[in-house]
Amino acid sequence: MKKRLFYLLILSLGSSLAMAADQPQWGQAWSRNMVSSEKGLPDSFDPKTGKNVKWSVPIGTETHSTPIVAGGRVYIGTNNEQPRDPNHTSDSGVMMCFDEKTGKFLWQLIVPKREEDPYLDWPKTGMASPVTVEGNRVYLVSNRGEVMCLDAKGMANGNDGPYRDEATHMLPRTTNAPALHPPEPGPLDADIIWLFDLPKEAGIWSHDGAHSSILIYGDYLYVNTATGVDNTHKVIRTPNAPSLVVINKKTGRLVARDNEHIAPDIFHSTWSSPSLAKVNGQPLIFFGGGNGILYAFEPFAGHGKDGSVANLKKAWQFDFDPTAPKQDIHRYLSNRREGPSDLYGMPVFHENRLYIAGGGDLWWGKNEAWLRCIDPTKTGDNATNRLIWSYPLERHVLSTPAIYDGLIFIADCGRKFHCVDARTGKPYWTQDIQGEVWASPMVADGKVYLGTRSGQFWVFAASKEKKVLSTIEFGSPVSGTVTPANGVIYLATMKRLYALSRN
Image (tube, rainbow, N blue to C red; front, side, top):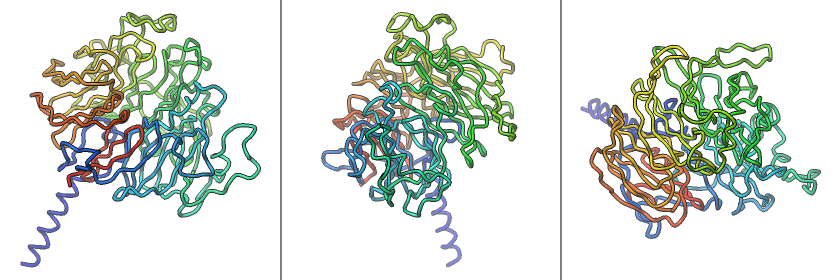
């Protein structure tokens, strides 16, 4: 009898663990689908009364990152307008680390803004890239365009190295900075293991700020570089810059890059992060270029150990907007009627199909935008008819689609939310919403969670029939996607990080 009870307890524990898990990367591993298997999540919450609010903490004043949860910690990028360290009060990007259960502040990474030109690292915007966590290592692209490997425990367990210059790195890059005697890092500071500077070492030209979610495959990091236009928005200063790079996760060494000459045709910047899936038994890296082209690359094969940088082998490419102009594209700046398309959301692989949204640039381009489904199984770069269907969106799009139970959920910047049939591209329903949407919808526990730039938060039923479960006023814009993990929803507004669960 005791043995039977023991086995029942183990089975019960195993089933509960299967429903609750960390979320160490933005979106599902590799495929990037915005769907979680978490259960028992609330369909409403109230930040004013505390209903279903487990804890909340102040962060900065501009938060465009998505919270990531792993190893008992929650990571969120923000700015330094509410400094936690009196030694560091300058305009900086900040990545904060909190205890998952209590919201206790554990440590932070401080990266002062680039000051040569505001368009290289836009003031006050903070650190927009979400981290990717593997074991005790935290990988991140900073606001300065640095790919970093951090110790998940910060400086609390000492400076592990080989990087040892954290004190100087936290200082503003100005002639007035007290470079001779920087304050020594303490247990509340980040421990940088290694650092790779994309602008200096890969020749990219940062624009506004990095937004990169690192993809890990084997021993390598796949990183979109956020290279783009200069302050005129009409000139590409580094036409030979890579758009996608591969870095050894153990050493921080650049080992491969794309060789597709994308940079000259980037309309704004390179803010779409890569995804991965096996197609016809072959793993492929999918990448949306800033030129409106979707690329499929073979993963880095491990060559170039002599110190050389290899070129990624392209399997195929797909022109997202084939009728758009291809020459002298920057003459269409501020043209809301015609011009090129760009891709900011991530490509999502699901059941042998690839889904991606794109269209005219939100800030400078045409109003048209689409959600498109393509066939990645066709072989050859010149395979025709990859397009399966196309669904027109209201206006501009930054979202990554969420695909669940034969449905696709996506929001656009025309203040509309869409539910579309994943097989046919036919709409089931739409909902007018207040405010632009920069976040991606997240499906979990039969619900769709979506924040808007107006501060209004929506919860829908994840079904063919439209059903609004709740709308919540946070009073502060939401730029990032919510993250369900271990039975809790983590949500960041511009100024606060919330842990939301049934109470």
